Length: 320
Image: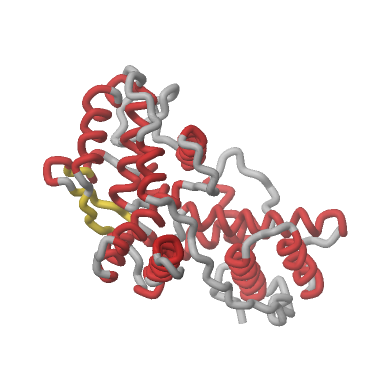
């Protein structure tokens, strides 16, 4: 009986027709990523993460002359062990295992495998790690660093103020467009994971910084003959900023503020949530502003808050 389900070859042929210049051979990884994009409609960030995990495994197997389609469970176990040895966080390892499971299940479905090598892989629940957060004084120290006599400084000040005021993810900031911003009302529409939208208020400080940037700097960053709806633009190209650029500027201003903590754009998101809870905000409201589908994800910040309370007690109580 002829299978009605499309084969890998069919998928690869369709992929070739879409891509130029087309190649005659496609790897199993390419076929799988194309399948995820076409059939599952995953976001570019998710596709990139899946592909990155699989490419790392492929590179590990290459010196052993083992094609990724022929990897055995022992090969995968050794690779996963190596990820832990180089210091990769357990959450990243768990995600990699999930990538492998999906990939080999796909190969089984397409009858390119008889045995699933991921069946015996151990997936231990990753222990929740309290996120690094900045104190209010540290945040203010960073916010004071951009040089407002320069275009870059005005732009970066708006970026930092916006991140701290909204709790936005870095991907939400880099894709932010003019149509999402309602400065007169002090609101912004953000699109989170799964394109789920939420409305978040931003305070006066962020509004002032954004208005200054939008009125005085952004028009100068747009290249002649080019149109873009992106809010935060690259100085040289006039295009939307990348996540790496945001990461770099965070490091720059943390250094200038003499902050030695390990920082990323997500640190401002963690600080946003923690400072709200420390100020007495309701957990459900913070969940809504962060765009968490499950309140248990937001609850991690209550543990951060408890750590802060213990620190205050130790510091100020006469018998702390």
